[in-house]
Amino acid sequence: MTSPALSYVTGQSTQALIGETIGLNFDRTVAQWGDRPGLIVRQQCIRWSYAELGAKVDAFAAGLLALGLQPGDRVGIWSPNNAEWVITQFATAKAGLVLVNINPAYRLSELEYALNKVGCRALIIATRFKTSDYVGMVNTLAPELARALPGRLTAEKLPKLEMVIEINANPSPGMIPFHSILEMGAAAHHERLRELAAKLQFDDPINIQFTSGTTGAPKGATLTHHNILNNGFFIGEAMKLTPQDKLCIPVPLYHCFGMVLGNLACTTHGTAMVYPGEGFDPLATLQTVAEERCTGLHGVPTMFIAQMEHPQFASFDLSSLRTGIMAGAPCPIEVMRRAVDSMNLREITIAYGMTETSPVSFQTSVDDPLDRRVSTVGRVQPHLEVKIIDSEGRIVPRGMPGELCTRGYAVMLGYWEDPERTAQAIDAARWMHTGDLATIDDEGFCNIVGRIKDLVIRGGENIYPREVEEFLYRHPKIEDVQVFGVPDQRFGEELCAWIKLRAHEHLTAEDVRAFCAGQIAHYKVPRHIKFVENFPMTVTGKMQKFIMRDEMTRELGLQEAKTA
Image (cartoon, rainbow, N blue to C red):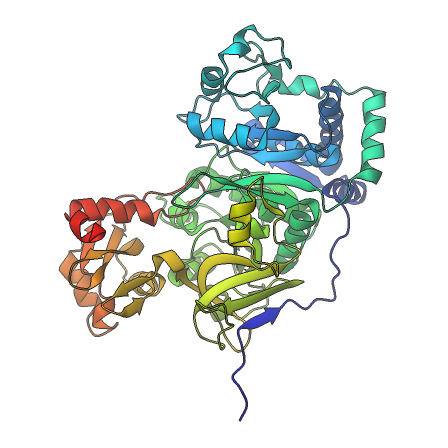
């Protein structure tokens, strides 16, 4: 009698890992595709070839060295999407500086924590974005700026911060204008850059991204050249990117989706990076795709929904589109099908991962059958290992749900100066424990069935909210839905669904329950149903179910049951 196949997969590939730094790889791209479009930023009217972008990256990298920054120093960037962000990403890598991505939505205490946690010597900021007055917030934390010489800050609350660089031709007192740094590098600094190119190692840390769960202070996931360069390359391979492609990137650069799945997937293939705006806007994204004849488009599911639901959607010619990535949150099957059909995204892929794994560990391929591309997150990425384990750490048989763990080149070095939380996430054998529940089938395709903490246990029955969400997406009047558990005296937990309807549609809770009757098991039918206009989300489009759960717990008067 043969034992059942286990849920363990490895990414076989004839394509070797890239054994060089981001700077050397970027130089190779500039040399090979210098005359091709490199960066297009719609809101700034910027159209640079790779050669033009490369020259600005080198000038800025030399300028950073002229400021006195040394390899290993941390440089924060707090800005929405713009050309300066892209220049900074590659310039810091070439100068051996560690780029610290700061969420554009952060407020005072979060900014103070992030800068002090990793000890940023320099901070690059936009002037403002939406309701965020970045200059005002930095001045509140460091009032000493008003009297400081630019680059010579001494601030009580931010003791390591010495220089603030503003993306503005006329910066606030004490701040250095971004564009002036492009002129600072002397011949000696350019020579120093060439020396560093030979000395920097691909295992050096190059990027810190803050990740936060529902509790505790944010953790600084520390990533290397090797981590994110290779991940970007293999992501681009799965999409079959070429120098003829133009990728529209409306997702935020501060997150892996923008800077790895976007920028590094492009630069490793000579593909043009196209930015439709500072932040996501469905109309601007549609206009950009049509005007630039983009062949690829990235986004989280809510972004694709917003574009397809836009009143002017039908007026745009999207026939140039071919591929792209839907990721960043569970991708509903019906949304994927609509994107393929109505946006011409016949080769769209789904990617799954987490910041701590650089981020992608599974991705569908343009060659996968459509039903697999819309219903799974694909197969394991090249050179990575994945296993699915039970609560005791044993690998489960194929098809059984358990926690997904990833090992290989993509796993972060750890959380910055936080060995305790690093040890909780990465075990002694270097497996990164994701906290996601998944299954792997006999062909190696992976399905994410939920988060361990999102699993709802109702009267002893395990319910995966994702499964119920997928079913409710089939209703023609439902645009978006989120399902989660709330406390219940009798069953321990009960299901709750927050539902957003399509424009001008009407449904009652009883209509929803009638739609479920006889189609899914009775215990999976949501007991509590609330119709909403919007969902609480992170700036990257991830749903914040813990906020929904807390709000419903209060609304339904379930506080006592919750703490019983």
